Image (tube, rainbow, N blue to C red):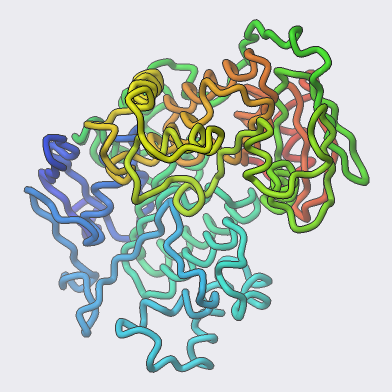
Length: 501
């Protein structure tokens, strides 16, 4: 016990191995009722594995786990259903069902055979209205497959709230939310812990969010607990970063001056790209990095146009040898355009194929090839080593890797290719601070080779660190203007986008 509060979850000496790889080596963790507890650690530290074990998605090799409710009973209801819910970093929604059906699905363990529509719609509306009343009023009958990524995130959080859970684990829940949506969510979480005694585990790599929301923190490093239930205010950002095993004190700030990289853009002086819509024209020389800021609707309309996936032609693209608009992503790729999607689980990672197939996917599209060759194996090993990807074998499946390492696989697809334009959609979503710095350096290196980079991020600080200029969109998806490097600041971006991330 701590300060008279009961622990809703207690983990002692938890161990887990996958083959010869030891992931958890004796983790201790305890969560008190009525608190928001930050679970911290670098990619590959073991956080996701521990969450999978706590929620019953994976078995443990050793150690003890206890869950107790307010009356000191096992944490399940009278029908034996668990009162532990998780919102994963990658959404776990059923796209062919409506928003309401997805939210109430945990209430129907035998499926929707006895689905009471009116009652279920009311339950779903009440849960979603806690987060966003306007969205709840308009979206219940929409198919989840038609929602944006950030709307899907809100539906999954509402499903956790609707399940009656007493312990909720949130894995990067704000990655695709605006500042207003994030603050609204934080307000809800604070109220649920204060008034209902809800226990919340909060996983995030954003220091500002951790400071805003977490009462205490536990830090895992290399499968072991290195900080156990420390008050968040008692640790500086620098101390947290050092305990996580990251390298420099600068990482704790999350932003620093951009480091100029010698660029070979002079060799591509005439190879410019012009992006236009009705209100703005953006000219980019070879080697420039254009940041894209704002809530998803505006950036995604631009990105869809660039990669050949747009349904409506709002944007046009002018570049020597290119059409005004690509008719398909395949045509765009074969014209020298690379794309890293932000929806890693559903549109990026090929989950049923090994690491080598994931890394070599873009090269195979460009070469019209399918089969693995000895040269491919050697190239894949070189890329895995260059990106410091920790894997027992290039024939392992991607789900053996952490989220941040999977993100490196997506970037590896385009390394060493002569891409004229590389479009990045939230490339650092869900990765730790050290991996972010590695990705920043990779992006700078690609730009140094003459590749134009278009990079959407919901973290304004990282746009400041890397970009030459930023095109900003407001929360309605309208282009609010372009900010040049000398005028870039977090305040300027927050004012134009309505997002203070």
